[in-house]
Length: 95
Image (cartoon, one colour):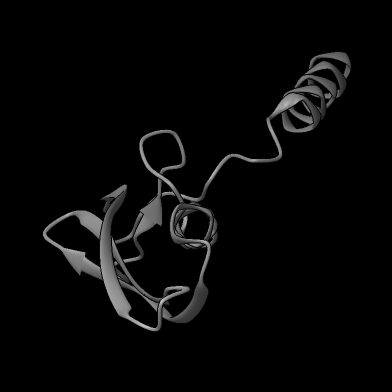
């Protein structure tokens, strides 16, 4: 009985000590891609960079995926009335 109690306590301690952010194992049912944040700007960061560069108004902004890399395509209306399209390399995706 004493061994069983210790085993239950040990199992409970290990369960509580497990990190809350531990992801469930991949069972191959879905292909979810998670963007990494350290190697490129997000879409909102890229929009802000382009807006500051041209001091203009953003017409459209969208993200395309090329291979495993995001590419942000941003159109901005410049002060002199021209629409300029900027392409900014975004984050690398892993799957």
